[in-house]
Length: 272
Image 1 (cartoon, rainbow, N blue to C red):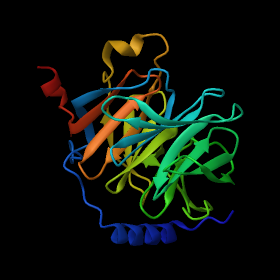
Image 2: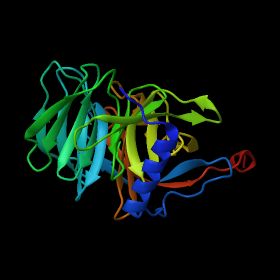
Image 3: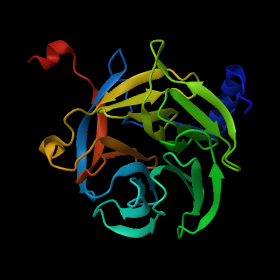
């Protein structure tokens, strides 16, 4: 597959941003000089503890959620305030559901190792088409012009939202070192937020250069529930651009959190 050179990718990215008129929300601060943030919980909502969350998107007052595990994978529409599932499509047992992205009136869903993705009508979850890709599918998000996909490595792929063809790839680095295990993705005001699998860290990635602009430390977010049987890792980021709300959850977490990002205290401050 032909890969567009980085210079071309940067030109495409610049045009995309110019066309989207992006603005930086109040809850994505500059953070400390190293780009690190922590959090403040704004609100807490119920979340199905049986949901092995792999993808999360907010739109029009609802969350759209993809759950994983073979034999238990689904696509869901969920009320934010109650956690109630108002629509659900179960995947065939052969598939392990992964990330989702909302593209206009369509939902794009990845699967883990099957090399197959699905496109649904958002209104009723009717399947419109399937597509194929090489390697694994982990997370996916939409920047208003292109789909951005992770595969568990340090690489992000850019896909054409019309035909799902791959346009380009970029390596994610932090201070020159590759950052792998990139999982669920969310596009937030010009940056790609990425859960790093098996950690409580979210990387804030520039889609232009692949460089990590900063880190969000969510250590301790779930609290004592984290140690209950079945509770798994942090995974799931959804952003409401109209109200600047940021939601996070995890696999089989009993809670969904609306958080505000705040600068991480310095070592001296944290000692007092």
